[in-house]
Length: 139
Image (cartoon, rainbow, N blue to C red; front, side, top):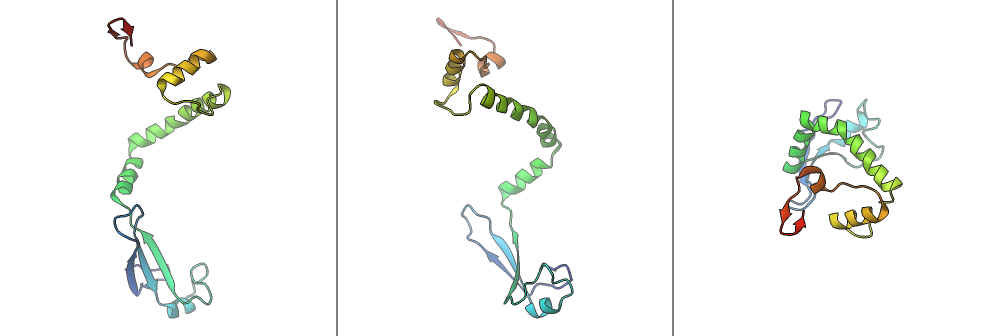
C-alpha cells in the first residue's frame, strides 16, 4: 500500500485501465478523506470540498523498463553527448540547402536532387563500402 507524505496509508488499491491495449495500466490508491481534512500537510494535496482523494502510479511495460535501463547505461550517455553534432548537420541541410520539404523519398531521389542542386551529399555506399562491379555497372 502507498503511504502519503504525512504518513497516512491508503485504505484501498485498485488497478485502472484495460490490459493488453497500447496504454499502460495504473495502480490507483484511495485515501481516507477524514484524515486528509485535518492533515497539516493538506495544501497542494487535498482540495477543499473533494469527495475522494486518490493517487495514481503508472505501471511501466517491459518496453519502457528496457528503455529506462538503456538510457541509464554509459553507452547511451556517450551517444547523447555526440547527438548535438548530428542535429546541427541535419539543421544545416534543412535550412541552408533547401532540404526542408521532401518532394520524393529514398536514397536515389536524394542523390539525384543533390546532383541537380550542386551540393555534395555522400551516400551510404560512397562512405562505407568499397566500389563493387557487377557486369557493366558500378555500385
